[in-house]
Length: 368
Image (cartoon, rainbow, N blue to C red; front, side, top):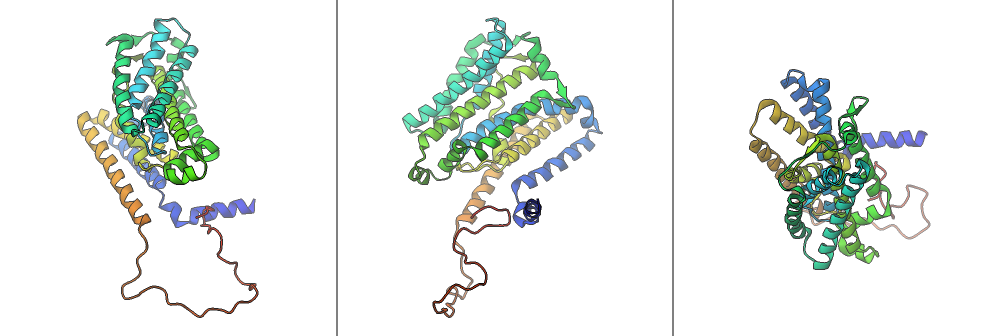
């Protein structure tokens, strides 16, 4: 027990911990929430407004995670928004037109998302074309399929139980928001505790080194896109439950938030790393901006401009940070390097400090 306490104290005492992007985002999110609560005269803290805030935060969280898993392998998925809309339309169509019960319609929506993700991954692997181009093409196809399900009409009046689930709360928190948190925890467990998740990060960080280690980069690409599609299906189910009606335009406004959450949260476009907590906090910030727009009647185009500028700034900042970390240390002016000291004669190992051979370990317990 004393060892755990010492490790915990060392972690919080480490300067590296206090410079993490997640902590900075948490401070900004808390400050923004307090400022918005004051600006709205406390209206944000009312039970109805707060419940709606977290209810409509669920989909941005899951859609951000859907984009994050593809960014982890250095890819992009431009079809996440359109695929979310298609899965939502399929679920509603099956309940209203086909008369299927809600559980079967939900499973069908998840299966459609998973299948579309697998197709995206296979197309990337077979054609050797970057996922940006492949998913741009599949996005257009999916938009056509989404419109073809029921044209411009709106689906409503489907399963009362599913719609009731979208409005229910537990301990003051909407159930759809709690589902999104559970999904986030599962994604964090996948990347942190499973072999497949770590292989995805290895493929994204260095495909060549991963291949030399026996990891199939092609398999990682397919798994990442499949998981992204499955999460888009989850986002669709939450949308159907929380909104109460769906139409052919649903999902069109999800592409920018899908990139904003992971990129602002600290996920690199080049792959090799994820940040579930950062993605959650960034989705929270984006949702704060949406509430601000609704409360003060700001033109939505200005909101898109602000979010786009923040995403661009996060990308540029990440690029600069990566270059600084990868650049070799330069010796001070006027010096040519450390002067060689006297060499000790060979002899038995001393009983002083241990040799530095082997991986160094910082105060957080991670090997470097």
